[in-house]
Length: 401
Image (cartoon, rainbow, N blue to C red; front, side, top):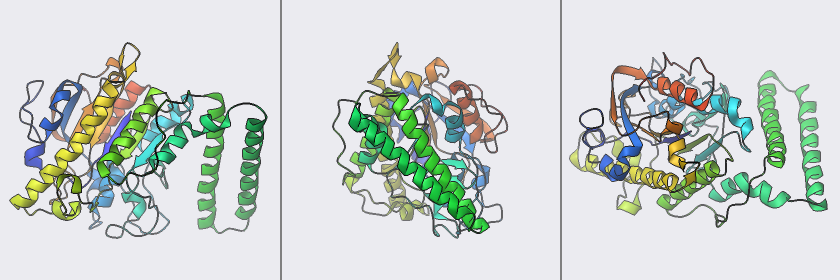
């Protein structure tokens, strides 16, 4: 199960298709991935109500990314008292993450910001994180492909066997013991706010300790691929390298759960690859100007092209009786529909893969009214074998996917 996030809304006139069912008409933007038509469905009518203001004023970009996987309302604060909700990927990781070397994998193309003030008084933690382990603990994504590779395979590649490996294991254990002892000694002296931060820190340290133990038990064969050198200069190459790593992670069963923020909401990235020097967020406030809408459409198609690359990689990877895409559920979309309106209903959402034969792609599924996107997530968790009664503001399961 993977969730891929696109920022700043889309050119709705060029993104959304016409018609329903298997015979729907591809839109101008979706034609970029027409070769994969049988592998995905377009779902319209999904919404995130808790991304709306609800009396909190500005901050739609922060709320869009914060609510996308949680279905919860972000507390408006730029301080350390952030509060949101657990995300769908982490609900899954808590129940099935022990089956793999990594419970989950969090990726981004942006450097990490988990503190400070970002959008209209909201903490940067909301805007730069998709995955949330708890109400106040985001799962920081990694943007460096080399570090992602080392997280996936580095422990297996370097630990090995024999006396040197045993010394390394003992050293890791002694470091963990020392860190935990020092942190616990501070707890007695800390104020309540610092104690909460220490608890978060200790939880992270324990996660690392468990990850090392799991890696020793669940070894994976080193893939015969080049180790990434770092962050590529090309944005397109950066995204594709991350998709390659996500494919490797699923192929080697290093994890079964991943999130990828292609860019944070509110991103002002420009797109030299397609000849657009304008900042994306600024363009998204198009005021219905045809020149700006045309550029937004080009950016939409650029992102969809990367999705097509990922789907091709998954389809080309054998998995059991079929291919990897057959056994995946891939959500691609964003928390804003029209960037000029900042609306959080009628979201642009694609659901790809067959979910191990439990999903029927190749259609446009047009939902009536405003259906919580978390209803889709609840249905996906069922297919993953994860027991959950609700995700955020879900009102039931989304049938017919």
